[in-house]
Length: 74
Image: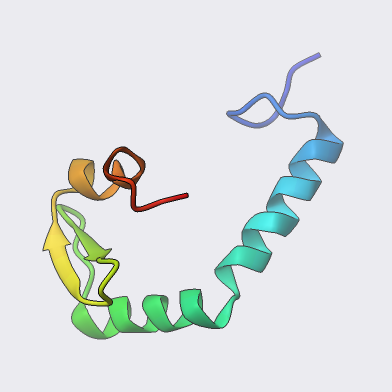
């Protein structure tokens, strides 16, 4: 049976993951960050990194996606 998602999740697990992802994306803090990114202007060649202090800076995509290695993500 072919699985229709890149992580190989079962249909039930995929539904739960999508619900969790949407709930996380709709929190007030995440919505503020999304609105701020739109005001600043996102680009395809870099990311806007929200630092623990609350500041935003433009960084390379590789740096911004590796926040777990710097202890910024629990």
